[in-house]
Amino acid sequence: MSGEIKSFRDLVVWQKSMDLVELVYTIAGEFPTEERFALSSQVRRAAVSVPSNIAKGYGRRSTADYIRFLQIALGSVYELETQLELVVRLRFSNQDIVKDTLELCVEIEKMLIALSGKLRNQH
Image (cartoon, rainbow, N blue to C red; front, top):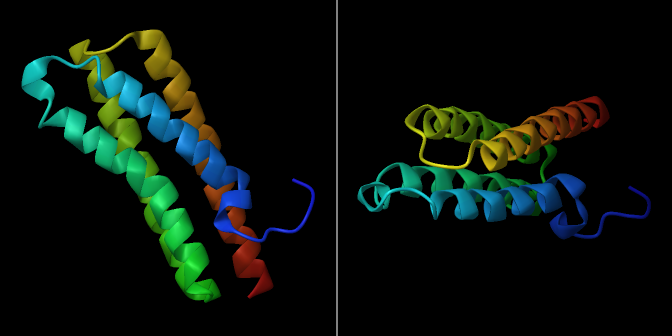
C-alpha cells in the first residue's frame, strides 16, 4: 500500500476484514431459522470482532496494546474459521461462498501476523 496511514480505515487488513463481515452476513442469512440465535449469531460476532479489534488497537496509540488487539483479531479469525468449517459440515450454506470466505480468512490471518511482526520489530 502506498501512502501514509492516517487512520485504521487506511489499513488493507481492516478493509479486507470489513469485506469478510459482509461475506459472513451473507452466509449467515442462509442458515435455517432455528440457527438464527445460535451459530448465526456466533459467526457474525466473530466476524465483526476482527475489524473492530484492528480499529480498537490502532486507536490505543500504544504499540503493545496495538499488538495485543491484533492478536485478539487473529483469535477471532481462527474462531470464525472453525465456525465456518461447522457450517460446511452441517450444510447450512453454499460451499463455494464458504470456501471463498475461508480463503479470505487465511489472507487476513497472514496480514495480521505480518503487521504484528512489523510492529514488534519497530518497538
